[in-house]
Length: 159
Image (cartoon, rainbow, N blue to C red; front, side, top):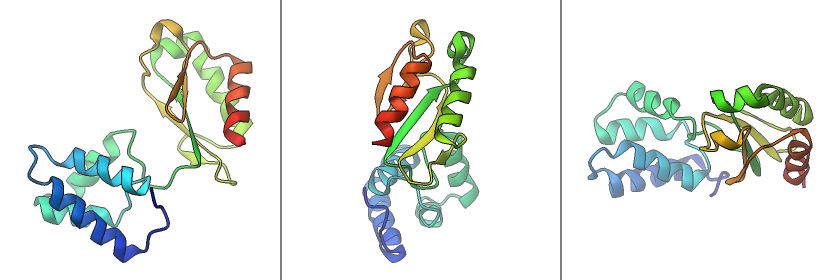
């Protein structure tokens, strides 16, 4: 992941990824995933290139990208903390947990702490409904998260 790549290189890299994947059936999602893997997010400069090469409108490309919660428009922090916002987690205290996380980090969902350490994101099911509320830190799932667990996760991410 290289988030400090010059803008010309972004267009060149995007074109190379599109060329490699555009022959797949339904290539847009694989292309977006590959771009996010490469850059850590999907730069806006990629969208016109994708649209042109796949013969889609920019609005179609942006619509797909913005529909899926895992695609980012901006670089994430060094750590990504995702909190489940689905009904099971909400019914088990997920709302209070989310508010606590926001206070501890001093940010809202889809934001990154000023030091670049943590990005806070909502996710709409981690598949742990029977162990709610749940969270994910850097791809590692945590079940039955309470206030002290959340504080430990935040402390870990701040290191």
